[in-house]
Image (cartoon, rainbow, N blue to C red):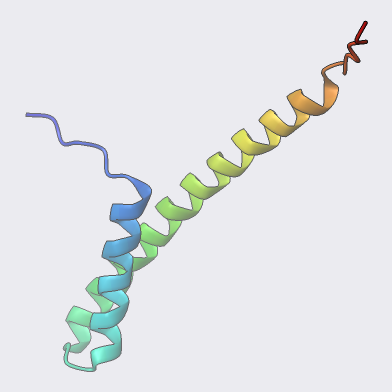
Length: 75
């Protein structure tokens, strides 16, 4: 079965959980390094999703701004 693509919110929750683990001070050095590596990867993935969303919003805004505005006269 194919792995489902995780959404932004799921990735962010995992990143927050990793941050909490790192701040707890209960991990060994090896565990901290592994968690940091996973967190860094999740951060990059979240950042790419946000950049993509920003590009889509900018595209929509540009389309709206370039469409001619029609004034309808009432009789």
